[in-house]
Image (cartoon, rainbow, N blue to C red; front, side, top):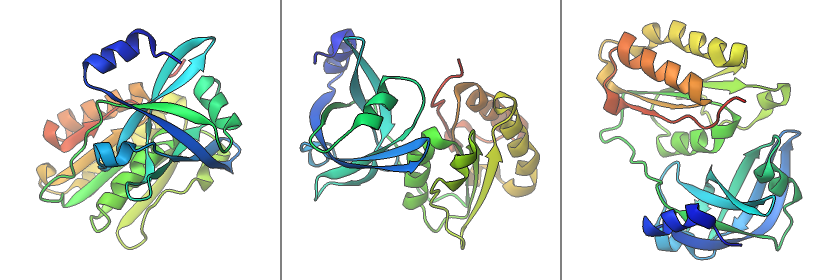
Length: 242
């Protein structure tokens, strides 16, 4: 399958293409599916970093369609990784539902990048949801000893069982039901932060990845109301409401 004009742009931006092969899949909940793959040499060629993502190519009504997904437990030595899909309507979720051993999918590595803060923050604040769960877990794995508060929004009842890798000794996990298009999550975070942040906001680190509108709201409030420096906030809207 060709990649259309998007593929041409990514190639001009030195994107690297790889063919990955499905080795298995598991249904984590009724709305969440994990697919296991071999990497086609990708991880040795590109290296690995926390929250690393790739652009996957799907066929949508005969046309190429790309979406970004975070790698789960990438292993450069074994040449393996997994992908996790918050299932909904669309060609990416359809592919994940059908994925069987031997199926292949093309991936482009271009644009990904994250460096763990050095020195480590005194406290980590993470705000995510099922769509960003792989990145949330990757971030927590990268800073296992850093005290963290995680707000995890749950749009569906079954999301309460999703495996957030919070450690009881260092991490506080707050699951928040999705209400009012994300406004409930934003208010929960806003109300709690003043009592958690401490005297020096520059020593904390924020990682925000939920729907685009809620991500914008939270980022603005954290920077303006709490005076957190912009370099201490990593924010990305993972999806848009329709």
